[in-house]
Length: 202
Ligand SMILES: [Zn+2]
Image 1: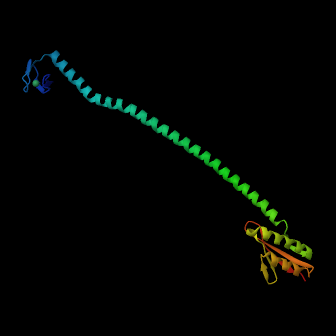
Image 2: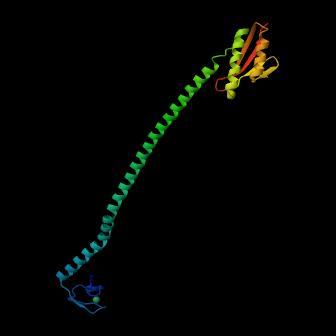
Image 3: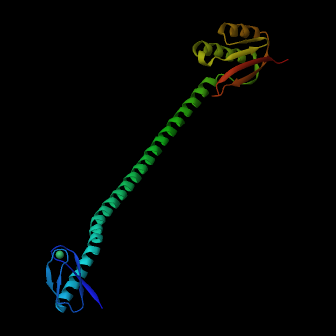
């Protein structure tokens, strides 16, 4: 025996019907329904379409809600990536500009230092000298040590080792008694003359 069912239009309960039944009464609300083949088909058709609606509609609804959200989220992500990428590119460019500025400044400072070193050292030379030449170098040390105390040159001669202009002048006077001297120059880290050592050549 085959059992079919209809849904009560009044209370929504499921009512079982037997094959061949003409009438059926809802056991819950007592509504009576007339059953024929056409009606049964209609009923089952309605049921199945209701089932489709029940199962498909929520999924469709979710899709309809989700699609715009997914699109918006993707646009936001792409926009974010593009902005952050362009921001990082512009950061890179500006840091490169900054680096080249720093490099230029370093280069300028290096050239300035080289010019200063050249100007400072041009009065001094190492090697064997006659008396007058050493006197000329010591005159420059005296002048330099008076005006440029940050870069005072130490003069060494025999037991004397001094940066004092007066003492260097005393050394100069002693040197007049001799003809030939060896001048040895020492330099600081920047390349400026730092030490002038005078030795007698016998
Ligand atoms: Zn009912």
